Length: 263
Image 1 (cartoon, rainbow, N blue to C red):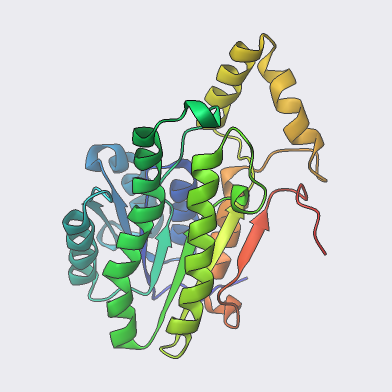
Image 2 (image 1 turned 90 degrees about the vertical axis):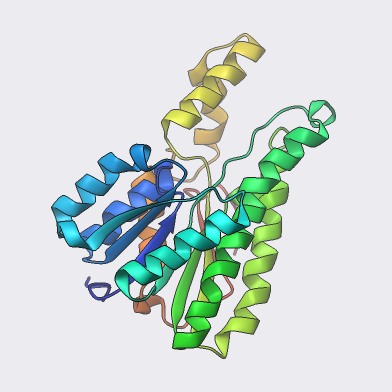
């Protein structure tokens, strides 16, 4: 299906992360122009070269930003808009929270986790939305996480950030709809990645069991009996960024293989 993204400029924040990178590749395959945002331009360089090979050298640019810094975030978004003349889509894919036993997670750890995932996304939205309002169009996709709805006891900092982001998505949809702007969220469950493998290894070590045994309940809890791949999640991100999802706003799509039971 042609998603009509060939003439769109897409800013992917958190593009060096596994989900942001997977989304960037699919946007490139759809012919979108890409502004890749992350803390390290060096880390983003291989992805940028890969995407340039798919859509051309002039249609991919890298912008360094620390989303913990409001000025850095705003400067990167402005630079991307200046470089390509406009922005049409924002994908917020930055941030991953640590886990742990609730009463052992101190204030500093909570603040670190919320600073990037929650406040970093807020800073992105604040930087890009005025541009979208001025042009009377825009699509926003926030990669949140299904812990917002199904919190795990050992992953509460991330669950709290995710729940707050869903509230922002739902509330902003009302504010932005009159300006022709849609905002939606994607809520992944566990995703097969190096980060997931590290988490399973750590949990297995703490429990004195194997990583496979630690992972088994997550797989058995899904209807599809497998974890998502980054590409599984990215497919939904790209769809929501397109006009094929024209009448969707203020909602979230759960991508967890049927682990969440809902009508």
